[in-house]
Image 1 (cartoon, helix red, strand yellow):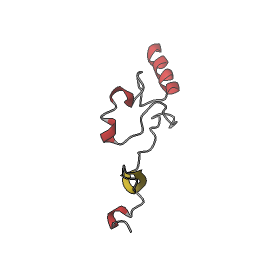
Image 2 (tube, rainbow, N blue to C red):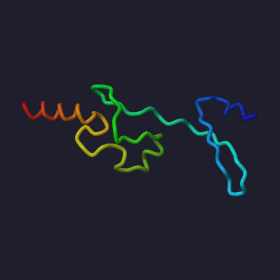
Image 3 (cartoon, one colour):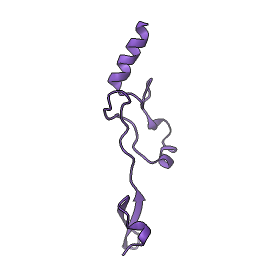
Image 4 (tube, rainbow, N blue to C red):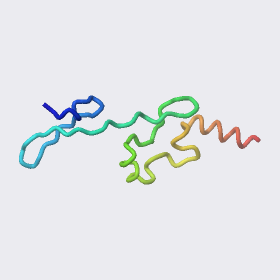
Length: 87
């Protein structure tokens, strides 16, 4: 039986195979939810879904390289840029 701190279902169980052939169970924190558009609440494409300590290592892969990338979806950002250009 796992230790009491690992019995929570908030941790995901990952089976790992060791070099000696033995299989162990590791307990990892779950991934965060998918990033959503601030305007239409649609799922954002091209935005990494990782924990903060892994996001630090990603560099420029964290978000899409365009204005409002990682905050608005392409459709909403296009509409907003058009609106700003008009006046």
